[in-house]
Amino acid sequence: MVKEAEPLVEETYQDPNRPWMRQYRALLMALHGKQQEAEAMVPSILENLERIRGYHHGTYNNARIHALGGKSKEAVKWLRVTVNEGFPCYPLFAHDSFLNPIRKDLAFLQFMSEMKAHWGGIQMRMKCLMLSVNLSRWRKE
Image 1 (cartoon, rainbow, N blue to C red):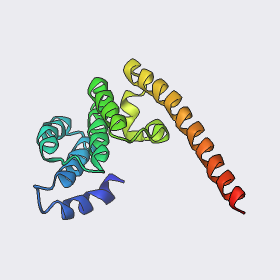
Image 2 (cartoon, rainbow, N blue to C red; image 1 turned 180 degrees about the vertical axis):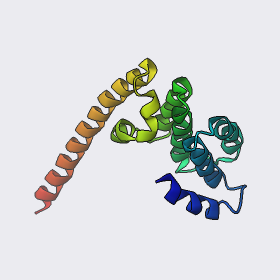
Image 3 (cartoon, rainbow, N blue to C red; image 1 turned 135 degrees about the vertical axis):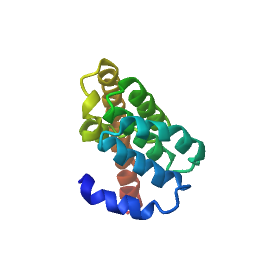
């Protein structure tokens, strides 16, 4: 996977001022075991990362970079920012192999426990919303 992605990232990396591309490059570095270099890129990436609708993708990638280096505290910090920025995706967090190095860490386990409960609440609200929409349609007929 990394070998296939690397040429695409490098090709797109032509403009090093694009924070999204710099972040993917940092993620590739972390995957290659160049953890210190990857983490050193994070602060400058964050400075230039705009608080736009997709900001949570950037914060999630920061969590992944730290997780690949086994830095659970930093990874969980960025996962919490990701959730607060509007991306509380428990199934993704539960299955993302980039988070595997911290899966047994107590802080990560606590975070995942909180997320599982939160995700259950989201699912329940969605079911209620769908029921409401279906009832509204039924009433109009």
